[in-house]
Image 1 (cartoon, rainbow, N blue to C red):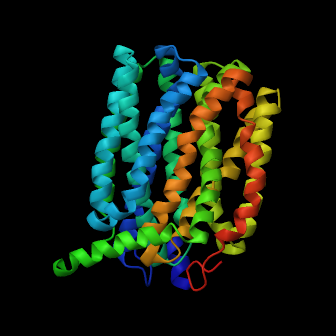
Image 2: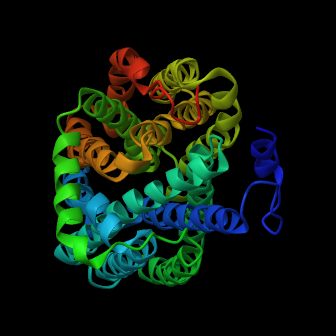
Image 3: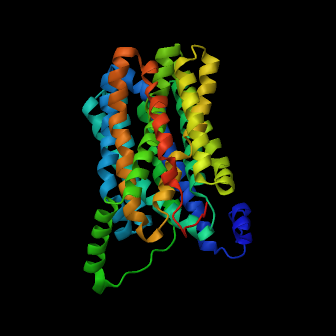
Amino acid sequence: MSSTADASTAGPGSAPPGVPRAVLAARNGVAAVFALNGLAVASWFSRVPAVREALGLSAGQLGLLLLAMSAGALLAMPTAGLVTQRLGATRTVAVSVLLVAGGMTVAGMSAGFAGFLPGVAVGLFLFGYGSGTCDVAMNIEGTAVERRLGRTILPRFHAAWSLGSVAGAGLGAAAARAGVPVAAHLTVLAVVVLAGTLLGARSFLAAGGADPGSARDVAAARRGSLLAAWREPRTLLIGLFVLVMAFTEGSANDWLAVAFVDGYGLSEAAGAAVFGVFVVGMTVGRTAGTVALDRWGRVPVLLGTILCAGVGATLAVLAGSGPVAIAGVALWGLGASLGFPVGLSAAADDEDRAPARVSVVGVIGYSAFLGGPPLLGLLGDHVGTLRALIVVPLLLLPALALVPVIRPLAGSRPTR
């Protein structure tokens, strides 16, 4: 495993023994695509309080609006793996980022210039559909790179996503403080995300060519593989685990800034900064988590991080003190950091069946993003947005029983 260790420390321009330069280039390209996807998502969520104000929405109405983005992502998931197999990760990411950039622009323009609620919903649907497709494609590419490197690296790709989120949250807070219009902010970011993602995807691993004469057989095998994945108990249980972890992460993405504005009386800019604390915690957890996962294995590390997330979310909601609550937000982000990427990595333990299984797990997991925003929004109408977030630690407790299913398949790498 010496080449593995070398691969983890080598710079982008060097090729350690046993690791082809093409794999290192793909590693860097995947990291860039993850980071830019995080930048796009966080840029939107950091301006949610401003959009709510522009449209005059209640918490429940805002939750229903956010449902449009989740619905787009969920609709993309069932076929995203098959699309990636057919088109290749490079072309799939290229098409999906066009939808992401277009959706960001439509949503920003509709909210900022016209105050046009249906336009915002359409933009968010496009954003969600593109992001959901890109999510599956870049994770499939990431697991392929992980296998060729021979070490746990998928959480670091998600750390890159979190770094992009930190940048997006920081830029959003600065834009809100400076009074930059939502439309201008999101349109400029859409252009940056589009150009950077297209460039990063160019370095993805080359897809193997298929025999044109066997195209029908290959297509039938892919459909059969997807249907078979829906009947696998391990895959379904991983999906349930990812669902809970997606809700844990997504509830903070959707509601944290608004909850601290409403519950602790913070300004819009300060609320965006609190969201930034959450994504910093996510980034730290995903960066350091790969070392912990390779040393101690998936099960003990996830048990510890889930407990950390539960304690942090409880403090964020019930502390009553701003500084203590913000410390809870940091713990929440740290604890929520590994569940989603490790769940996807577990679904991809068998590389041949990874696209189908990642699609299934993605559909189940992304249903949290579909049901979470309206659930918390409607609950927030009755108990307040901040208090509604107590649902998060209540769901994390039973999720502890699902952690053993994440244990790697026999013969897969990483072996722990």
